Length: 393
Image (cartoon, rainbow, N blue to C red; front, top):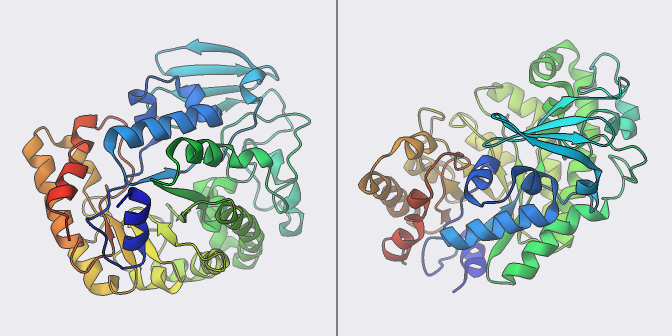
């Protein structure tokens, strides 16, 4: 049985030959462990695809999550120069914009040569009916962030067709791994788009400042999320992940989740389900008090399941509450994984999750959230051998 088959069965609550293994890696982990330049991974479809496949093969993962859309084919040609600094690669673009790509973290847009180009939207000024011009804000082309503002770009707009280059990474990865590995696409939750559009603090304040306007904007952002999610499904990914990182207890209450997240993610879920492929949800932090609300979106699975200290749910409890309806992925302690010093500590952590999770099927072994940049690769290399022994059905 190959990885694609193994994950497909786990997502359907059927029994594969063993517990599948699939972790999301942070971008910093790719930067530090592939030998590729960070700007090449962040800004090019070829570079990111190479990093994805390289690390999948190294860790023997059953699946690959493509969590950045493909980039414009000629984007690297628009770079004026790259300076390697202590902080990372300082990328200066021919149009005068500057991006910092840290050695171990996501890129940061730090300078705009165009004063009329704004990094964040103004909630008071923005018109929910005029979001087609949303790419006036830095990097906000669908869910691509931290790419330079490009004059004369041919993107068709937030709410219409998908730029063809968005599919590049999917195509390259599929060509390299064939049908042996489960390939998952990612779409940001409308709520994630909302927070990125206005900035986290301002976005959260706006929910109470004018909830009707906030919901009107979320409605419009839901259209783009649906379009990209459905487009990936039709382009041949094996599953779609809704990245809803900011919908946990550290940001909003269950009541606010029900009001500002649930109805909009439900529409994304329903749209993808019409394409007959699995869709599941990634939410970080404390979600123990909103598992039923997450299930109410119609999602087929939940990813992360952060245990303490970042979260407040353990795998056994999640299986008891929702494990008969949703598949589960994650729950390995990401903080502890970074701190562990010995092989025995890692084996103990992973073994416990395998033994609890495999009962009745519907479990994929994974770190709770992304593998942190500085987690040593030898730790992750232990996961699949453990699954091949302890995780057999």
